[in-house]
Length: 258
Image (cartoon, rainbow, N blue to C red; front, side):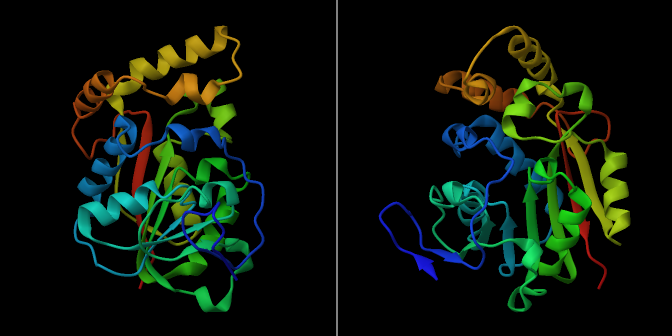
């Protein structure tokens, strides 16, 4: 069943019923393609991924389709989008690939090993049981396929922003290594990133701890000034990739054995 209503920018295929997710919907309002953090995250992915095929891509937790758009613009690759958040799916602005309202725990036979490459960008931290969720997601992945994972790094940065965004935890490499090991995944490449942004993260944590606000996502993520956004993007690149020292985020390319 598809939704072609005026509220939906793209037809949504409903393979599962929509559900509430642990995600601050306000985030989609501010996470535009030109946001310095969105651009930096994708640039880090480009440094890690190496060779790439043109087909067989999907993003689990696609939200409003930013990664799908970035992949289309950078490589001409169509990426299927998968999410349970109907609000986010109805904001999806990507131009190609299927848009699926689908619960990975349903493990539908027609989607078994349907994809060669998966994105899990800033999804695992929202799950109460990230291991169980990863196991269900791997139902989608072909042997020899890859999963690109991005997560927020280090619990000492955990703040009111993480709570508002629906984050259950922040990660270090040992946690990702253990998670990969549980499911027989190899770590093909990984990096911390966002080291130049650490002072901003500390300032945000302090600021939000003393400020009473009903708009934590806006106060902690939005950048309203284009010049400042440009400066932050330039500054965010002042680190080598991959690096295994410190950062505000962690990205890893995990491979399912053939």
